[in-house]
Amino acid sequence: MSFEKLGIEPRILDILKKAGFEKPTLIQKECIPLIKEGKDVIAQSETGSGKTLAFAIPIIEKVEHGKGVQALVVTPTRELANQIMKEFVKLTDYRMAEVASVYGGVPIESQIQALKTASIVVGTPGRLLDHLERRTINLSHVKYLVLDEADRMLDMGFIDDVERIIRHTSRQRQTMLFSATMPGPVFRISQRYMEKPVSIETERHVKPELLHQIYYDVQENEKFSLFVHLLQHEKPKLALVFCGRRHTADAVAKNLQIQGIDAKVIHGGLEQNKRERIIGETHAGQVQVLIATDVASRGLDIKGITHVFNYDVPEKRDDYIHRVGRTARAGKSGLAITILSDGDYDNFRRILRENPEMNIVAGERPDFRRIPFNPHAGRERREGHQGQRYGQRSSGYGRGGHEGHRGGSHGGYRSPSGHSRSESRGRRY
Ligand code: AMP
Image 1 (cartoon, rainbow, N blue to C red):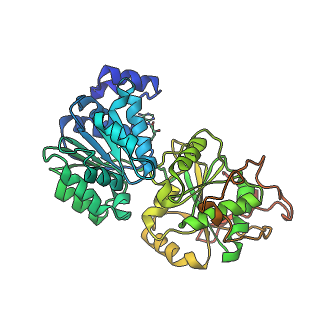
Image 2 (spheres, protein in one colour):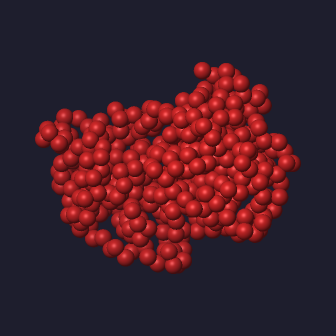
Image 3 (spheres, rainbow, N blue to C red):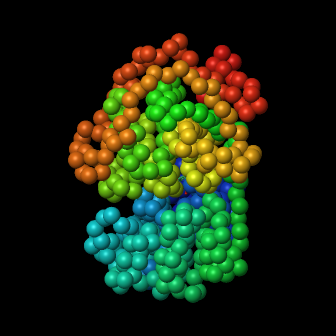
């Protein structure tokens, strides 16, 4: 099906064509006609599905200029707010001044200015409430409300804030809720604030046959050494490495750098402009290893992730699914590697129990060189003394090279049934 068949305005069709978008994604096919009809929509969708344009196209067509804020997109993180704003701006290049994004961590004054003329606002709950309290935003004319990544917003403790924001919007609004999963609180929001919503469930973006999942079970003090070994052998084009905590993310990045491996880190403790710079560098293909916390990476649309590493195991099954789903997209295969030690067993067992269909195979323990890991390294970064030392680029994966590495063995994978797949039988990754 073509975009033309969805009855989209010619001006927007032109922009889509110029952006190289030939046909609508599944979620766009499903959502655009319903939203155009004025229906409330609940879409179970993930980043990468094309969900932003699914709501942005009909909204752009509907808002009228100079009539106050008519469309509001509430989103959990600043990065996502920025990303969505950019998609809107792409569609409205001739009306650029009309889209405002509001989120914390940056000065409020320029946002106040932008809000004076905006007809579409994309924002995070905290800063939106701040503007409401200052009376620098008026949501009473909002006719189109989008709750994006609703499950994450609720996970992050924004449920009361989101409800307060919803109550500031017009009762005659159309509400669209996008969420990868539908936990109880999201369902409750839909019941309370939506009018006969139509539910749309698109196929999972990640194709199980393209996503290969492996885990390695090692001692806690071996995690970093194995991780470095795997990086050196996998040579990922772009690896996204998840750590549950900010200080672990900082420490892993810093220790990698000590090994001569260039890694960038992104988490909520960094200044906004730094986060944006790192995301920009990643989009530009200048980053090979990006270490992230779940919250900071949520919703970020980063293309070409060849490897996902779980440096630790998340508590929640949904977080595991979100993490590994960042690779094996757009028809490409991807590898998700989980490194387990004592502290991860409970979480991992729960994930396996709740996802019996997931095929996570045991990786055969390779020989790897022991490397010291300083858990306190990187702490000074958060205190602002980081300077330029961090993130220098190295030419390859580690100045240690293959030093101390015995026989080039990477190890193979053993499925739970005990069958071993070794290098000699050919690796596909
Ligand atoms: P989203 O799921 O909204 O985060 O979008 C994921 C990515 O897909 C974004 O980089 C979009 O620019 C891109 N995209 C959205 N719609 C299409 C389409 N119809 N064809 C190709 N790419 C698209």
